[in-house]
Amino acid sequence: MLGQFPNAPADLLVSIEADVFTFRHPDDADLIDGSIGEGSPFHQTFGYYAHGVAETTAILPAGWKIRLIPVRNQNTGTGCGLCLEVHDLAVAKLAAGREKDCSFVAALLLKKLANAAMVESRLRESSLSGERLELALARLKRLTPG
Image (cartoon, rainbow, N blue to C red; front, side):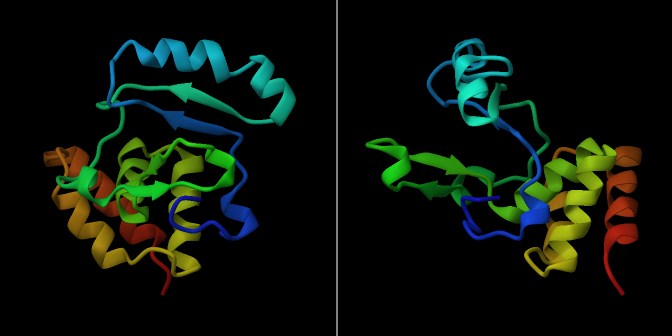
């Protein structure tokens, strides 16, 4: 979210967790959890934490890697983070379907930070099919304002 919208509305910034993975090695998820995960000194110091995940943890549409948003600023030092583009993020949230994910997508749509037609298109480009795709599309329809 912050990669694309660094000044996002406060109600979209309530999570204290960020899912993080590297392209380097699948075992890095454990390293992330141990270093900056929940309950770590990092979490205790800064009030937020990372959850190490695998590249395949989230359901994402085709082409998501080419749409990653680079984040490089004084807070990243010499590193560069890559964040999901907002419509790809919305797909992952709708596929997960938890209440907090649906509320997040509803806020994205209401604040016009995401476009429902683009989210629908990306949902259809994801690995979801059959009943799971129809359920995600129904969630999107229910959450779309007006």
